[in-house]
Structures are given as structure tokens and as C-alpha cells.
Image (cartoon, rainbow, N blue to C red; front, side):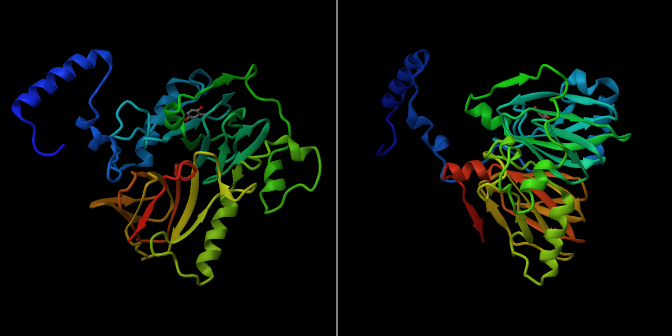
Length: 351
Ligand code: GTQ
């Protein structure tokens, strides 16, 4: 529109809007600039949850409701900018799940993809289509969409892990289906660790029925700390220069195609040597980080955030992140990069 509106024009337009609104018709020209942004302007805010603080509430919940009663006893980590949405970024969900000794979280399946990143305890399991992954600290375990899963804790210590799901993405597409299994646990189909043995070592079964048991597109669902942590150390020890924006960083892969771990979620780990300071980097994938080891500081734009082990930090889309390792710093991170790349939306800016 060339030039400002005359008073007469403006008042006639207001009358038009008022008449159209009850017919569910709206003028695009009043909102175009907010709908088609020149660059991302996330409603999500950077935020850090300290583990000990959140854990105290989770344990109180543990005294008040059983895993069975709750179906999943989880505290949702809701982004302070996404009130009421149960979302940590506009596309992703995060929660802290507690399973006490002897408890079972009953079998169900749903469209949503989930990852679990173990924060506390050693020896509980997630069973996926009847195969257990025995969970140890800082293991990554997947329950891809559509697969039956239950959790149980046969140990004498509480188990806590971070749940990362694509709940808001599935909600966005209006595509959620979920069902309970008829029994508490899905019947065992294979010994614990079977898929890891067959698909987790850069190999795959040459032949055999068991090769067909897992869904062909998603055979591997356990990425143990005992494997990913030494890989990062070896990289650091090799003399390779850390990436100036990331440090030494490795992405978890689906062995079928070398792509991201699940259809909607990507995950990675990174190691920054003591004293290392990254350059600022921004990307369109708002990312949830867990501090695995070490102490350091993050700057999200100008906000400084101290980091200690088990802290959970969310960095929204297109906010510049800079990290400094005060001691050797190891982070796990997950984001919707997998989904954005499929939609040709992903961008990063490494300045
Ligand atoms: O363990 O299946 O945090 O279905 C949220 C939804 C965990 C789970 C969550 C879920 C689960």
C-alpha cells in the first residue's frame, strides 16, 4: 500500500474487519509481518533447570503417586515462554521421569518418538517391542514412534532420566495415536542388548529371522555411555583441533542410513577441553542440553548461565550460544534438526 491511510479509509476498513470477523475472515495485511518473519523470533526463552532442585520435587511426587498410578511419573520441563504448552521448545517436550525400586511404568505405544537420557541410577530398563535396554548413567535409549515400550526398575535405587519427545510436533500435525498394552509388560522377544549386538557395532546381521524382528528403519535403540564417551575422548586425544563453534562433537546416527536417530529428533554429544571457549553460533533448531561432566558457562545472546553436571539448558532457535569450559565440559544435546532438514528449513550461522 503506497502511503498512509486516510481517516476515512481507516474507519471503513475497521468497519469491514468488524463485519468479516464473525465470518472467520481476516485481513492479511494487518498481520503479514508477524506471520512471515524475516528471521526466527522464538517465543521460547533460554532457561536452565538445576538437577538437585528439580529432583527434590520429583522425589516428593514419588512419595505421593506410584509409577503405575501415574502411568508415567514425570515432571514436565516447561519453557517459561511457552506457558501451558508442555513444551521446552515450540516443537519439543522434555520431562524428568522417576522409577522407584520395584516399579513398572506399564507398556503403551504412541505416535510420538521419545529418547531417554539417564541422569541417575544404574540398572533399570526400557523395553522396546519386548527387548530390554539396561540403562546406565548417561546412556541414550530410544523408543521410536509406534513401538511398544515399558520401563521397570529391578534395582534398589531410584532411576531418573530425561525424556525428550516430539509431543508438540505431533500435536502440530494433529496426528497422535496412543494405546495401552493389555498387560503391564510387553512379552520378552529377545535377550537384553540383542539389537545393540547386531546393529550397534557398524555391522548388521547377514541373515536370519532376528534380523527382521526390529522394524527395518529403526533397528538400534541403545547408545551406551560406555561407547560414546570413549569415542569423544579418543577424538580429543587424537590431536584433532576442536571445532571452533562446537568443540569435539559427534552425532548419534541411525545405522540404517547414517541419518538422525529418529524421524523428528536429532541428538549429539560434545566435549570441550578445559579452558576452551567456543565462538558464538546460532541455528534454527532450538536445543535441549544436558551437562554430563565438568563445569562451565553458557552465554545465550548476552545472558550468562553457569553449568554444572546434570543441569538442563534450553537454547531457543536462532539465539546465539557461546560456551566456555572451566573444566573439561561434556554435553549431550537434542533438537528437531532431523525434522527441519526434511522440511528444508534448517539453517545455522557460524560467525
Ligand atoms: O515414557 O512413554 O515423559 O509417553 C511423556 C510421555 C514419557 C513415556 C513422557 C510418554 C512417556
